[in-house]
Amino acid sequence: MDTLEAKLRQAAPPLIRTDPARVTRACERLAALPATPVRHTPHMFAKPLLRIAAGLVLFGSATVLLRTGRESLPSALPPIASLPSADDIKALVDIQPLTRALDCESDNLISDLTALTGVLNDRSLAILF
Amino acid sequence: MRAVAAGDTNAFRDIAVALDPRLARFFAQLGVPDSERDDLFQETCLRLYRAADAYDPSRAFLPWALTVARRVMLNWHRARKPTVELERAGAVPAEQPSPGAGAEADIWVFARARLSGAQYELLWLRYGEDLGPAEIATVTGRNAVHVRVLLHRARAHLAMVLERAGEGRFLKRGET
Image (cartoon, chains in turn red, yellow):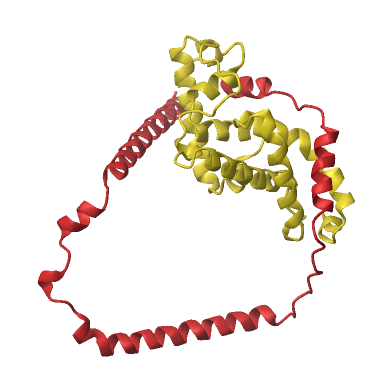
C-alpha cells in the first residue's frame, strides 16, 4: 500500500465516545417538533399524468413563443449602432479570475499528463524488458 | 429509518447515538470549534429526521448522513465568512494551529496547515472516514472521476510539501 496513504490512515484520530447529553439535547429538539401530517401514497398514474401535462405545457409555451417571436421580430430589432459592442461586454465581464482559474487548471492537467506518461513508460519498459 | 419516517423520535435516538462520534470527529477535522459542534450536530439530526422518508435503504447510510452534515457545516462556514468558500479557503482553521509541527507529530495537523480546505476535506473523507471515491462524490456533489483526479492532486500536493519540509520518509522511493 502506498506509504503516504498508509500513514494517513494510521494517523486518523480515533472516534471519541458518544456524548449522551448532546444526543439527548438533539432528541429533545426533535420531540419538540410539531407532528408532520402523514404523507399519502400518490396514485400510480399520478407521475405519468403529471409528466404528460408538463410536456403539453412546454409544447404549448414553445409554440406561443415561436408565434409571437415571428410576429414581433421585424419591429423588435434595434438599430445596429445601438447594440453593445464587444468592448462594452468585455468591460462588464471580469475575465481576470477566469484566466487565473484556467491557467491553474492547465498547470494541473499538464502535471497529471506528465505523471501518467511516466507511469505508462515504466509499465511499458517493464513489459518489454 | 422507516420507523423514524413514521414519526418515531425514539427510533432516531439509536441513530443519533451512533452518529455522534462520527459527526463530532468530522466537524473537528474540518475546523468547527468545540463550542459550535453541538449546534451543528442538532441541526444535522434535525435535517436527517425531516428527510427520513427520502432515505433509500438500499444505499449506505453514512455517506448520506455526511452529505447532510457537510451542508450544515458549509452553511456555518458561510455565516462566519460569507466571502470565503471552503474551496478557496487557504487552510481549514484549526483550534490549535501549529504550522511548525512536523509531520511525525501528526500528519493530519501538518496537512491541515498546508493544504487548501477542499484538498484536506477530500483526503479526510478518503483516509479518515474511509469512504470510496463514489461515496465521496455523493457527499461532495461531484462525479467519481473528478473525485479521483482531485484526490490524486491532493496526495501529490501533500507529498510535495512533505518533501519540502524534509519529511520525505513518509514517501516511498519515486513517489511524487
